[in-house]
Amino acid sequence: MGEFLQYLVTGITIGSTFALVALGFCLVYNASHVINFAQGDFVMVGGMSAVFIMAAGVPMALALLLAVGIGGLTGVLLYKGGIQPAKNADAIQLIIITVGAALFLRGVAQVLWGTGYFSMPGFTGDAPIRFLGVVMVPQSLWVIGVTVAIVVALGLFFTRTRLGKAVLATSYNSDAAKLMGIDTSVVLLVSFGLAGALGAVAGVIMTPITFTHYEMGVMLGLKGFVAAVLGGLGSFVGAVAGGLILGITEAMMAGYISSDYKDAVAFVLILLILFFMPSGLFGQRGVERV
Amino acid sequence: MSANSVETTGDAVALAPGARVQTWKDVVFSARYGGFAALVVALLITPLFIDGLYQFDMAILVLINATVVIALNLLVGYAGQVSLGHAAFFGLGGYGTAILATQHDWPALLALAAGVGLVVLIAAVMARPILRLKGYYLAMATLGLGMIIYLILTQESWLTGGPDGMSVAPLEVFGYTVFDELVWYWVLAAILVLMYWIAVNITDSPVGRALRALHGSEVAADNSGINVNHYKSLVFVLSAGVAALMGGLYAFYSGFITPSQAGFMHSIELVVMVVLGGMASLVGAVVGALLLTLLPQYLVVFAEYEWLMYGLVLMLVMIFMPKGLVPTLHGLIRRVLG
Image (tube, rainbow over all chains, first blue to last red; front, side):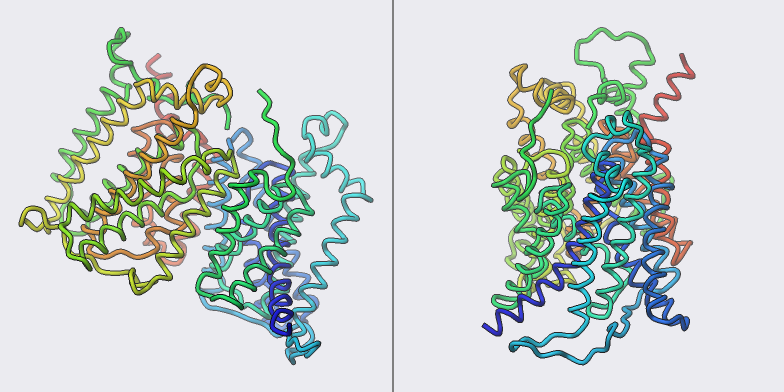
């Protein structure tokens, strides 16, 4: 039982990051129908910025906020510099643009910060906590807590604010939203900015546990994409559920069977889901219109 | 995916065999005549201009990539089915061949055939469930399949040498060992020309028309009596088999193979070659392979700025030439000529 709980906590912690990355995929996809292959690199940008801003002597809380802001700005710049100019591009061109952006961000990180692994101390120390036979670092609680807070805040944003409702309306039907007077270019800007900030939050809260590295965005981005598709691309609830399912499955697999194929779990899971449920767990069954 | 493939494809609208030749321009700009002649001439004169091991090495890599990319273009450019895991077929073909030839002392050609056979079998089994998916779900599934193959090649070190890769015995055919760069060049050039010729004929055949039709609209193609699943599977297996063949030859040529050959970034590189050169353009596939194989070599001078520049080039080309280099230039030249 203790073992199981231990793996569960590990799984929820890592699953929270996947959920945040998947939410980023979702936001961008809903607003623009773009799959943003630079989403994982937003996480790297957040983590790296936090480490190096702190190293410059800035107090931790301020450094974390700045790092999230840099992530958001990166998202906005990606939209302004890569997506908006390519107005009439097809899906595949947009995929390549975001892949180009991902390589660009990795390149920038390599130039600015080198190719080393970096970490930073936990927000409230690193002394392990014992609870019901489970040992965890306090940072795990931060990761889970921040993720819950963000999910709640996003929920409020979408249901209670004009801007949030505009984002939702655009995701349902961009043309109709435009006709109702919604400035969809603002919505797109907000969506990319939020996606960048969400990625950076994931990077900031995970760095004390997992380290950060200029290439860390590759695998994390792919797993976040798996989580988003797992839950049905475009579904916010699905993205969170997909992230948690993926994190927990990975942790159980690593704990009970072997950690050799930990990274393969995501891809086996997604192939099985797509073969048997082609629209993901929470996706709507697509009806093809001709 | 939009339905505008036919008018944007440039040389895809090649002359059907027996069709009335309209003007000399149509002949010059067709993939069947002009493109083919240009390719053959370029391949024949290239050895006159290059020298030394390094330049031949680059030329050989271009030949290998171009062959893979032509076949991948049939799948991505003509049939409109995105594959983000194609490098896995390349890598698996390479490893299959390498393991049989090196560890089990199989004759080289038999090992190569077995490596290709293994990949064709996997592709054939996976084709139906994977190609049922559309758009990003298809992209995700091919990416997933590719990652699984990559991770197996990385993890099973007892068989594959793990992340560090494995060395491969040289290619030995009927007692003759192929070492010489120039021999490799001519062998691979011949394979490229053959692949190009096969691809031209496929695109002009009922299969090619079926692929373009289902790219435009699967439902419309289906209703016109085209067996959509059959044709999609056919071109998927074909492109996977070609990738495996070239993977096997690459392993023999370089004498070494690592899992990164099967990795996600290599898959992306192959798709970028297709799109940057020009979707549904066979000349574009060769040009895309040429430029993107050589680009990193030129960017080396930027040292640590290499990746930054590479990403920037990808973004800029896609933003300003979304149809790809060859169709864009082709359109420009034809407009000038009137």
